[in-house]
Amino acid sequence: MKTWKLILLFAILSVGCKKPYNPAVINSPRSYLVVEGAISTNDTTIITLSRTVNLSAGTTVNPVRAAALTVESDNGSTYPVIESTTPGTYKLYSGPLDITRKYRLRIKTTDDNKEYLSDFSPVKISPPIDSIGFNLINTGLRIYANAHDATNNTRYYRYSYEETWRFTARYSSNWVSDHVSDVMPRPTDQLVYFCFTGTKSSTILLTSTAKLKNDEVYQLPIIDIPATSEKIELRYSILLRQYALSADAYKFWSLLKTNTEQLGGIFDAEPTQLVGNIHNTADPSDVVIGYIDAGSVAKKRVFIDASQLPDTWRATYPYGCSVDTEYYSHPKTGGNDVLQVLVPEIEIPLIGLVTPNSYKPYAYTASTRECADCSIRGVTKQPDFWVNK
Image (cartoon, rainbow, N blue to C red; front, side, top):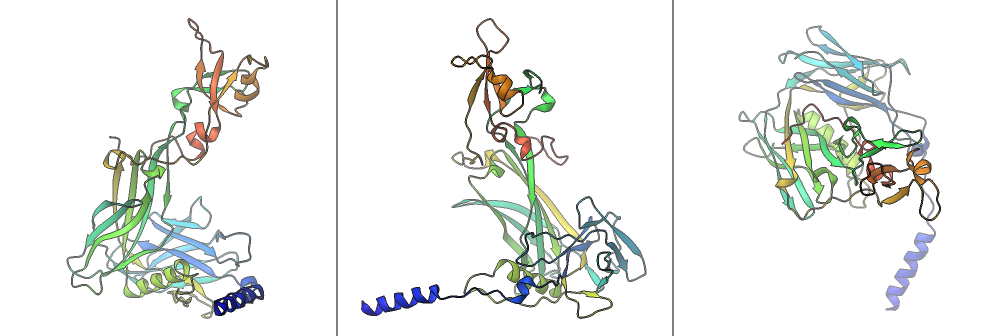
């Protein structure tokens, strides 16, 4: 017992005597170019440029704007990649590219007047995605993908996805303020009970069949969705993209995944230096983070309806909500709550309360915008790809 007490005392003293470790690299002024994306031969090419930020910086986003990007073919053809409305995101809307050629990316930055060039990459053709399915797990829903290459030539795969789902506000609002002196029935084009929103994948999703006899991806986990998530309360859709990688590209993405997603614990691997295929044309020692390859993209979209899931699953609304009653003439105070609260839209009117044989409400139930207006978290317009059932 005394031995354990001494060990515990030593541990406490050791923790108490620790000095903060602040390596110089945390506050280093050096910033490195980060290039994300791939050259697509059958889809929109999307390239994102940013710069690394110090750990001590107050921001995590540092896009590179107004750069000049071109995709170049080994036969001399060039294709401009234009910056979109999202700063640092560049897109090539060209038609299908010749899959028999090799391609590379040229980058000219305006903020530091440097030029970068990726190595020529042969086109890797992605096989089709055979299917997307789901399994019920303890915490909710697991979406998986199946694919195969009958020629056994792919072996290395990367995936990304876009999620879209339909959701509701906590309460339905049938009335809207005129912002002057009253409220009125809500027009159908201003209904804010049903909305759509979505998100894109933010993790690196890879798999390899290099050690398998057959080039077959079977039930690869894509994403887990909790049973309490709004994503699957009504209707959910996922658009999955599959990329075929070279062995070098797979190695780069694997190291990047390790460095960014699998560090922090005492048993985790140590950070590994990334070696990409993008270089400063004038300074080989300049570090560039990124790997640009070329290939076709396989895409598949599926929908999942609440009717396909257990009836006992219930979504958790993200806000605490309650309903108030606002009067034209409050029974206790005589004050005009409607004019003070609903007209300036401090709260959103829900249902009008009327006396018998009267069409004019004497009061309204109401709630906060977070609970009565879904458009603060999404859009009411249905996406073009959405299929109603």
